[in-house]
Image 1 (cartoon, one colour):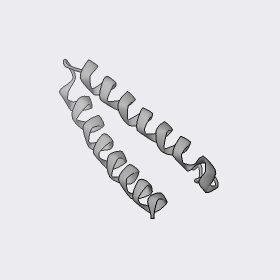
Image 2: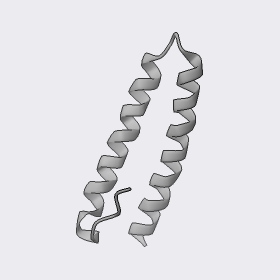
Image 3: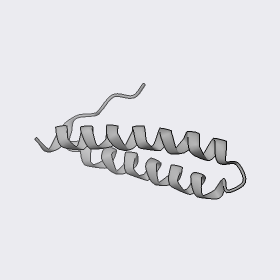
Image 4: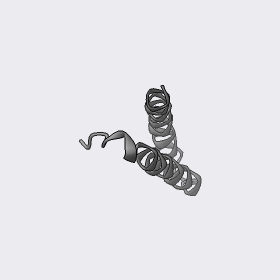
Length: 61
């Protein structure tokens, strides 16, 4: 699992994280006929959003 790089790269890493969350949103939106998979991805997206917020708060403090 990748680790956070030094603080100078943290904003870029947060941006990459945010882009991956946005990608999940697009995947979820495209799965209108497969609600089970869409619901699973929605749960994963929620978990990633919470992690993102934790990392962002940690880096800002």
